[in-house]
Image (cartoon, rainbow, N blue to C red; front, side):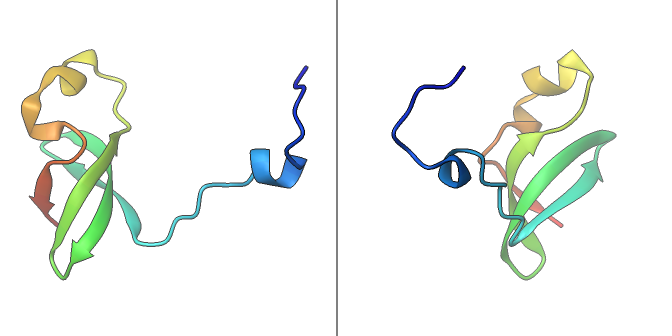
Length: 66
């Protein structure tokens, strides 16, 4: 149950996909936000491999070449 005064459409709104891409980098599936042509910032790690979350190359906020 969810008790709130907020409208349901605000609570359950879908995340906008504007500027985000899913790509594989170094064998790890990532969601990357495009920041400039050819470059992006890692938004999240989609991989199921726990080692990918510990690798500093794939941490959210790291700038990568697309």
